[in-house]
Length: 416
Image 1 (tube, rainbow, N blue to C red):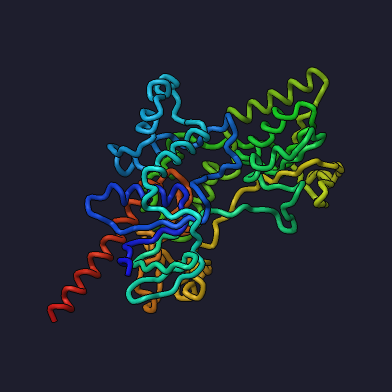
Image 2 (image 1 turned 45 degrees about the vertical axis):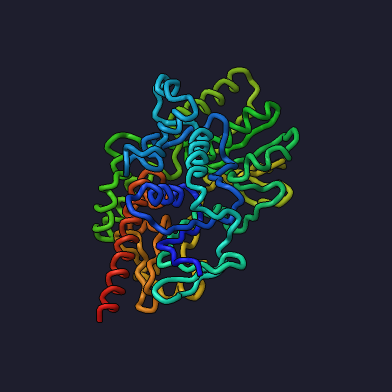
């Protein structure tokens, strides 16, 4: 029989990739396995636009804030790719998104021996002091689970994706199917929406591109030095220990560091394009502020409605792209009936300890850890890259403390 794992990671995006690296670097052997239903590593491939950049510093990579000397750092990746000096000369903290994805793939290749791809976990049940998970026809035993099931595309109520209605996560995987569009509609006010508007405007020089958002204009992201402290590892402690009212205030105060905001450079570029087209008298970039999209049909017909005066503009769109963000996947959905043994607060949210472990009743003795889905307890960095390196170190330390405690209990029982 296969030995019992110390931890099984479900999902293998950047968070569990960082955890696999922490396992690889740990001073003592850790029995770990990660299961990913995709055939290979991939992270938002549909939005890897050629000129899109990261919105976090390269120093907030998979390892540096946990281990600055790690061989898995972005700088080591650059050296391996022969671009370290070029990057330094670039004088830029924010790499291209395509480049950071290549860094992730580079790192994933080095820990591939910890990962099973094309492996979907279909069942979880308790077993002795841990769990038994079902992966295809295989059963795997583990003392701890680390769930990193990522985010799900968010579409407005009543809207379904189809041939002419997309979520922006599928942009690059579906764009080749679009031939000479006349009218494109993009819904949303955040970074991805603005990038999608610019992308369509560049790619199809004969198309009218309509950006639709409820705000009066795109709002700039607050990336000032003091505001960015909300992403510091120490901020997690502050947030976790704060009263519920303070947590709500902090999320409200600092939502503009991450949600529904756009880089200032991109805002200025889109404004330049709109103004230039007004000057030359050939306007095809049309930004509809204080507006919403209604009467959306699968064939692309829709209406842009002004929230200010109720005016309506019918559009026969070749494609409607919703850049309306993501929502956390239910982190315990795959636990099935075991989810009923996870404790919840008065708002129905999972109770989570400071080390990212779900609070469970006595019927579950194994540890269930979350990477994502903990904004209500740990703050805005719950599903972001900013604190990933530190978070996985804390999770691994907690897992190993539980493993050592279990081994000590077994020795004590043997003595008795």
